[in-house]
Image 1 (cartoon, rainbow, N blue to C red):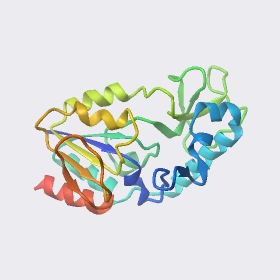
Image 2 (image 1 turned 30 degrees about the vertical axis):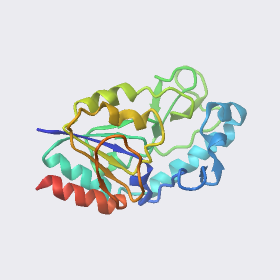
Image 3 (image 1 turned 90 degrees about the vertical axis):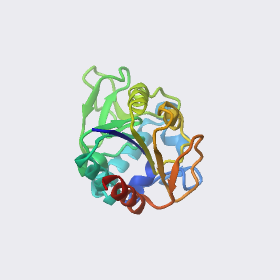
Image 4 (image 1 turned 180 degrees about the vertical axis):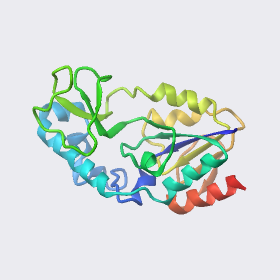
Length: 225
């Protein structure tokens, strides 16, 4: 069974109502990214940062997977499909994808501020000041903030090296190290990019300039033939 590796970004979840920040002058839900997505911001104003992600979590649980998420599940009828996502939502899992690797963390989990490997499921619950991880430290969102290491980048790179087909959906290819994953794909492997905007890539790819729901459906229909 051929292996398809799919790298997804904010563009695949946008049609489910999940907001992006790259498309709006660097603002994310009217906040500067520097104020809500760095460890310095968390140390400076932990309540603001916790409340920001509590709001994102509430937004997520009102959202539903869209046709792009569902079409990637459909690919599993014929291929070994591995999703590598930059998104912190759980829409791939809720759509039914069986293998999802999160590069930048998960909204439905919290973790110790001291030990990044001490991760707990929180589902749709808020995290408040005083909520403790099992090691007694303040529970923080299980999110990889700007400037922090990306623990899953090496497993993601290994998956990309094994890909027989590589697909990029809804990512600007501007955030590293995720944007560098395409360089691990073996020469000659077919690569597809689904995005309505021009995406800078340094290798030969087939572009499908459509929003995710339309473009992914078109590509999946082609690959299922």
